[in-house]
Amino acid sequence: MFHRQKTGHHCTTYPSCSMTSFAEAFPDQFVEVGIAEQSLVSVAAGLASCGKKAYAISPASFISTRSYEQCKVDCAYSGTNVKLIGISGGVSYGALGMTHHSAQDIAAMSAIPGMRVYLPSDRHQTRKLFEALLRDEQTAYIRLGRNPVEDVYEEDNVPFEMDRATVLAEGTDALLVACGEMVKPVQEAVSLLRDRGVSAGALDMYCVKPLDRAGLLAAAQGKKLIVTVEEHAPFGGLGSMVAQVISANDPKKVICLALPDAPVITGTSKQVFDYYGLNAEGIADAVCAALKG
Image 1 (cartoon, helix red, strand yellow):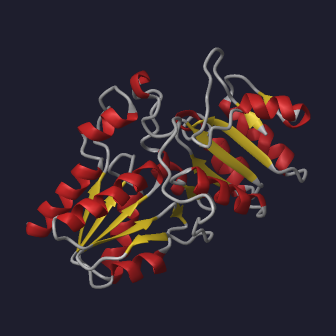
Image 2: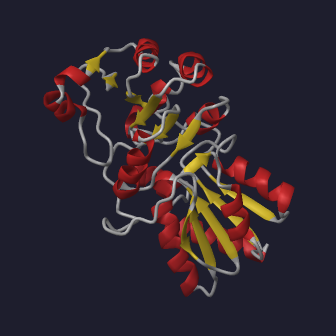
């Protein structure tokens, strides 16, 4: 396990597993490289080429940009078994602003041939995903948040299948598709819409690349509207991918709810989501407005 950590800044993921505890438990399996993201990825790729299972861990804003060439060449192009873990993803760094926000990482990492991209929605799905990734030998980028989030699934009942979207709800009017921390508000929006007389289905598309095209098209069949929700810029992310698949196979109206194409406001994740309507109420309002339009 490899880690990049800024001195004096403690990074955790929402499964509440700190790198410090891992380092203390497995000191011979932990390498701290300091503020050197390119070296972080290249060293991990070098050891992976020698048969090690390497996990390169760094804030998502840095590993997806400062190490981009190394992710592309040393990992994906070279076919090394490196799992790139982007922690404190999205806007979870809050007031530190755009320098520490990762709102373009889905688009950037998905554009690399051979790079898989995953955004698990809660701690239980994260565990299932990592158990599956431990068994394969392909590179992947996994974005995790910084703060604890509400559970989407029950600990003893996580409907997980590798590279297959999870059906959260069935509905007839609209289909909501989300990934990462946007899955919980989508789950809540489905209930709000039901109270408003709108029948909405929902998909947890944790596997952004490879996108579950078959699952998406099956869930979209017969719907009047498709709505994607993501903690990402409006270009090149989940919304773009879903719109591409729908337009080519089952044309219908698609709206993409995302962060703006601009530096976002500073604040906690909840404050940012509330401001841009990326919460249950905002999602439900957008669905109702689109169905009426």
